[in-house]
Amino acid sequence: MYATAHRVSRNGQTGVNAFLYLHGRDFPWPENASSLPDTKPGTPTDRQSISVPPGSNPVHSYLDVVAPDGTPRAILLEALKLFRQDVSERSNPALFVFGEVTLRFGVRIGLESERDSELDRLLVSLEQVLPPV
Image (cartoon, rainbow, N blue to C red; front, side, top):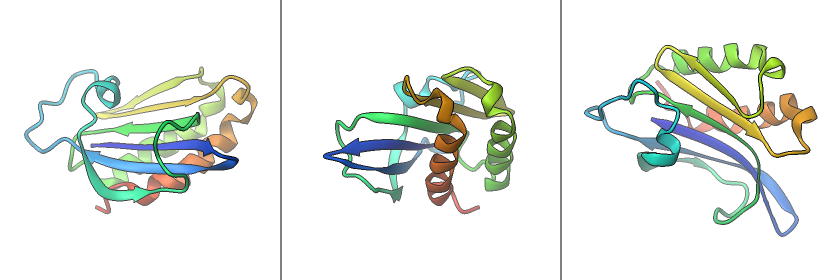
């Protein structure tokens, strides 16, 4: 499972787009899953939240959650909660691993001082697309 939220802009419009991808239960989960969003994001699902039409938009910030399909929502939310507690102390971009859950978060240069508020914006949209169970 790969869930992602990006704050993007186009033609003066700024918003957060979020998407959920699945890998399938038979997908061999790697020991280090941090590269999956770039190499094997999975199959798109209909769980998405779109504020700005997708495609070639500048990304201001992003939050990726990668975990095996079927990971309970409670575990995903716990990882996000723990990450949120000390995000201001982490580097940019940040990588956080909680069991089999991997989080990646980054903001573009110039937004480092707004990392907390960027993360909060992304979390709202990301939670909408996470698996319901």
